[in-house]
Image (cartoon, rainbow, N blue to C red; front, side):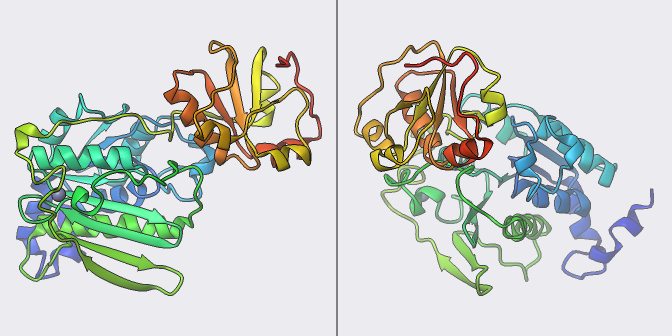
Length: 367
Ligand SMILES: [Zn+2]
């Protein structure tokens, strides 16, 4: 394989050149998550010839991922994202080394992983993992490239606490009003694409290290794709930051699994095949009164959020549902924190269920 030809277009740029290409080849990048952000970022990093790429993701490929996670195809559904992404990247560029970690990043494995790579790309969709990445990055002096999508907004920042602020200078803690989940919010795949590609570009610029490149260190780039207007905001260092204002040895890495990926979603067709289940409708009273699924129990989210817990067997499979499958994920998280396991959220919620027009459960438990 003639690598001069492969990389010629970027080597021709004086800002990259042979030296820059060598830097890319000698670099190692860990991408946390091979989803909407990780997919485009990883493809461009592999194509650019980053010598060593790590992918950590414990998820399986689902049909709902394919709208934006461009590493995957319909035939890949059910496979491990990390393993499959590795195959895809090596097919694109057999000249690089790719490691797949089919596991969840957590407070135990993060040190060894971070110490094996020069730079971290954040392809996650939840605060819990972003805080973990940030705290470990500060603790182990590792630069990382944050990415997020909120509706039509794409956001990218580079955090390197040796040179500027950190993520917790921006968000000291998880917002109280935040409703966790990736699965609930809408996104156009191309907005995830722009954001992930911008992260890849930041990585390439940081590694190539030409004086004309000014990576977004301590700055937040925000794109509003409604109008395509973008702005760059400075993130000042917070002298009381719970992370970067501390001594490294004082930073304790904490991680509690976010709801994403941990509350499995089930469809109507799957639910009717399950036996001995408890079906809980978490919609509010008015919604329940206007129609509900026979054999379901009503326990509104507002009641759960106020600290009340339904009296049901903790060892049974519990299917939570709401109108469309958003609030049920939040309800499941609350129950999970109360020690319930075997929790499922009905995807598509009540709206999908009534479309099926078979409101009877086979072997369903009436509670
Ligand atoms: Zn900070």
